[in-house]
Image (tube, rainbow, N blue to C red; front, side, top):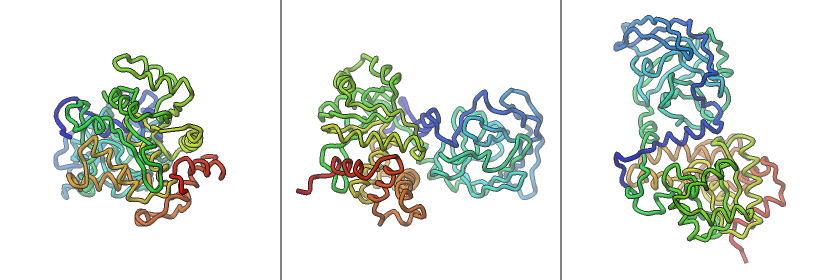
Amino acid sequence: MKINSSVVTGIFLAVTLALGTGLAGCGTPSSGTSSSAASSIITISSPASSASTFLSSNSSSVMSSTSAPSSGQTEITTGVLEDKNFGSVIIGLSLDEFNNAGFSFGDSVDVIFDNGYKLEDIPYYDGYYARRGDAQIAGYPGYEHPYIARTSSGSMWEETGVTENSKVTVRLREKGKYRVTEESFGTQYTNDRKDYNSDEAFANFRTFAAGDMKQNFFYRSASPIDNSYNRAEYASQLAEQAGIRYVLNLSDNEEEYMKDIANDSFSTDWYQNLYKSGNVQLLNLSADYGSDSFQKTLSESIYAMTKSDGPVLIHCVEGKDRTGFACALIMALADASCDEILNDYMITYDNYYGISKQSASDKYDAIEQSKGYDILLYILHQSNPDATDTDLKNASFKESAEAYLKNGGLNDAQINEIESFIRQSLS
């Protein structure tokens, strides 16, 4: 695959969708943001810093003071705002002011609140790239201010115990410590078919089978009806050719489905026929696979899938994150190994970004150890809550996948039906 300067979509766009569908701990600026921190005095300490003005969410301004310590250490002290949507702590400087103070994406920083609460050695990224539950500062494109948050995990505002009168100091700890992760997730892909080696790579379409799964029975792809990234026509054609007879649509609700099929630039008759016959499930899942609603909905939908004849297609919009988790869970139920599950997950990054073990091993490892490990560790924690990264390579995930389904409301008999449906006949 060739990456060029045509229409590009960064990896961070998936996070935009996640934010819009309820990714806990990752907020977006809104009119609901508190502005009382606008009365705080802001101190910027950096060799290259200069006087600046903090514009709060209600556009009132406060003059800032600056100083440069003899050590030349880069740090800022400012007021905070509460993100009313997701509980993130909003730093009371504009994103430009924060960056101009000497901070760059990929840096390691320490965060110290005036009540004594500290977050040490956390990354500063331009998206939500930290692992699930980990703290970071996010300077997301389109944000007015940097946000302090834990990825998909609770309210940072409540965790830190800050108030609208609190101040926070952010101090540079190590320049560029998380640069590889930042650059890996900042890679962009194009939405132009000619930049890819095949229709399958462009549509992220493939069969997946690991452990003792049935062969050529389960497929995954980008959406065959949502054409946001110009891939739907290709995914639709490939799915129809594969004889797909049942679909788990992880991303759409009824309204979105009707909007998608109203696009008459290509045919989705096969998909609409499956929907009308009850063979398409519209799950409308958020990107937070750790939420109770995600777990319950996915567990029930996987059981409902057993009443079909297959083959089965699983998709969201890009076929990457939500699809990646659902497919990992199904492979785990078939007793797939850690390497088998990770290898399938990482094919998506080769398809979209040309990131493979051979072509870009450092980026490959950064993504695998962030996103891939997160998914497997979350599954493993269902039956082994003390497991760590070092336990993944030799772990058996079947029991943990079964525990996930039980926690999602299924009983042993239903889980047995799922496993019989997924796995090859042993006779």
